[in-house]
Image 1: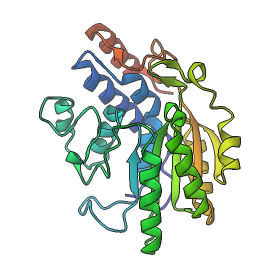
Image 2: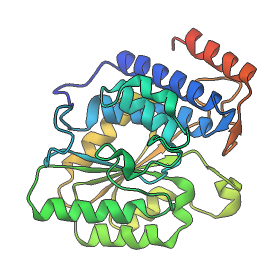
Image 3: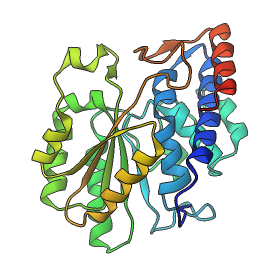
Length: 278
């Protein structure tokens, strides 16, 4: 679905708003879930699927497609909503989110293949999987990029850093990792659990092309992906600063990993999103 030119930022913002509303509605049906992460990452997911990724809606297993790996596999409300709004899944299916026996599970799994490239239920594994796929695609000399969404809490896993060394060693320039830097994990603020900053310096020292952006600014997002694709030697790391609950003023900045979302709060959130035009 990759476009020849940049999509209008206003158009992308409108799609992101629709996706945010979907996230609220999907979580609200269960009264609790990963709403803060979904609202915070909606702009990144929108850009990926409406502007960046190359895929064929008529052939989802096209061998030259770009691959997207969701390492933070529980952040599925925004993922499924984006797939639906990008025309890869019937939007009516979103009402099946987290229902027993349905493939729209809380953790994205290969039951939804080929839309889900791999199962990453255990955090910290996504970069290893993405690096392996990137190496395979390179050896096959295919013109595909591998994109990975990694949560900042996952950086506490040693496997991530082993994979980072591997990717740089093998010059996997077709690997583009987006770190959703919201400083939120189940134990609270990431910085209170482990010191991960300065992330940009760490990944540069590990041999990655690295940029730090505002994860809600589409101009920033565009520039970072363009820089990543121009580097033909190194893997790329895009550190995207995001705000949990973005788009809903009374939720913004609240670090609630699995938020309780009563019906009244969900309605207020939807009203905020409907009224928001900036």
